Image 1: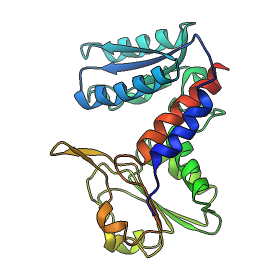
Image 2: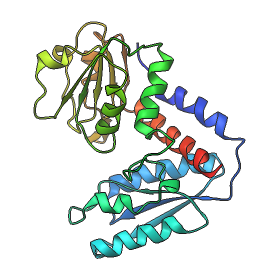
Image 3: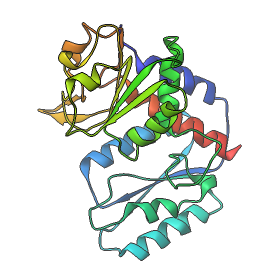
Length: 259
């Protein structure tokens, strides 16, 4: 069965539409990467639908590491800033960790600054929402996470480590069929189109695809959707799967922080 992320996201956003705040949702983009700008435009559209002030700060790649950290810290500390995100990936010259750590914990809707917080990372919130919607109980199950990146794979793996019987974490270059086939739940965020095919997935597994890549003008995920949907009990498509849900959870976090 196909999991419709748009419907799940809309339910979350509908609950947020009555909330009001004068605080701003601020996004920092370093450079002019077209893909990053496109993702930020999607977030701006959601903000507008909720009546949230969205401010995009485009910073020059000429800034030094120290200057960028200082600018992020300064924007985070502004009274009108309710939440702050730094769009990833940053240009390669920067060390992203201290840049993200410059976001104050009370403004960090992405939950990337390394401090303990009372909100879930949006990727984890999205996964939790999906699993609840299909009544999937992780207790006693084996989960496989492919692509342990900072935004998706790492926080998802930390979450699943606490609630599954067994967790396998695989790098995108080490996706062996036998390991992936152990998964009752397979979460993929490797950034490699169609990395996971039907031969990797056991009958009845749940497959959650966070990957996205534009090929020939179309978005595609890390899972070969047409193949795997015939084997999986539940699967997210790309687009229309995890993407809108992650954005909805981002704004849910925003309202939790500004309340």
